[in-house]
Image 1 (cartoon, rainbow, N blue to C red):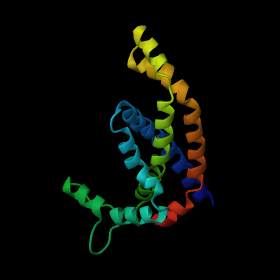
Image 2 (cartoon, rainbow, N blue to C red):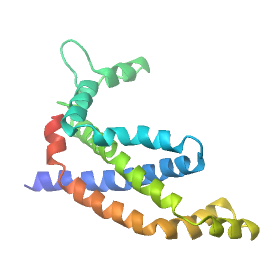
Image 3 (cartoon, rainbow, N blue to C red):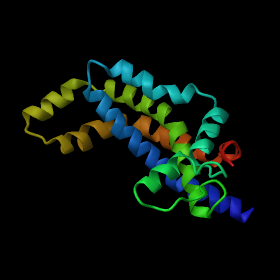
Length: 175
């Protein structure tokens, strides 16, 4: 029980901030692209509608070391001169890396969709007024964007905690 609790808390501490931060960066990028925004939103949302077990099997194939192959990720590691790692049956850190990467991959589309919608709902008048006042991009982001999307960020962080605490099916799908 204590090991499961430790693993869960570590998974929560890694995946919730990383997935929310990466989703925010991708959403900011999508928000700056006006023409192809809908296409990129669709592309980023596709992993969310894919079956969790199917994604788990793909990750297992990418990371699993077998007698016939070292797995795609290990081939890339070896190509850059590193040693192959058994991510599925190997050391603790390797398994935690795969589980964290998988969890981030699975939750990212939903977070991107919510944050892109929140960013689109911010009134441009605030940005125009800040530009007239000579405000920098970072200041506009911290003083306008973050406060305006903070309810969405709060929602994503809370649901991220809930989702990461019930990651049992993800671990079963991978290992």
